[in-house]
Image (cartoon, rainbow, N blue to C red; front, side, top):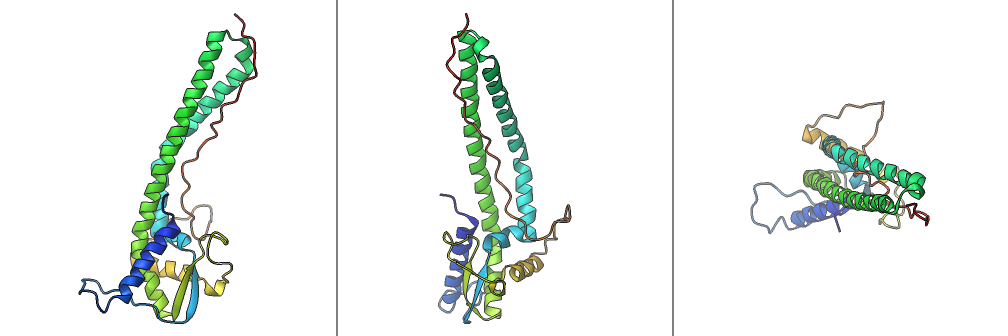
Length: 228
């Protein structure tokens, strides 16, 4: 199973916390470990939104979406070709001889299998590269999160990227949410400029969508008596 943004975040933050806690006994390192939060306040963060909504995340995920755009258009064209063949089978199937009918059905089945394989490969490749982007950003975002917690008296952080009951947070009010200040701090540190806005949209960007998987169900033509 591929790691999601949330699982990547938990892994990196957990490693950061363990490293900070062991800082006093660990060998000297070139980079000082992040301060271990010791406060008593509780915070929640939408880690997936923090990664995807940062200037760097928006830039890199948009670039990834553009990279896969030709693949998406290719799948879309193949899906359109299949739909056209299905319409031909539906409207002309009872007028075809047995060989032509069988050839058309086999063509639809073959193209459908190709589409299913290609769509699955594209989706898996996209997800893998999306996770690589998330992991790379999270490695740099984690120290910012830890510093923010330590500087502001927090001792417990919960990720509310996934709604309850799949996620751990039943409810977390705005007063507990540190997503925006953490993203603002990371944007300042990264030095990546905010992407140009189009259409007046505001707010954190969501992760780029995976290549669409077109409908690929082959209809079962009604039994007909082929004309010779």
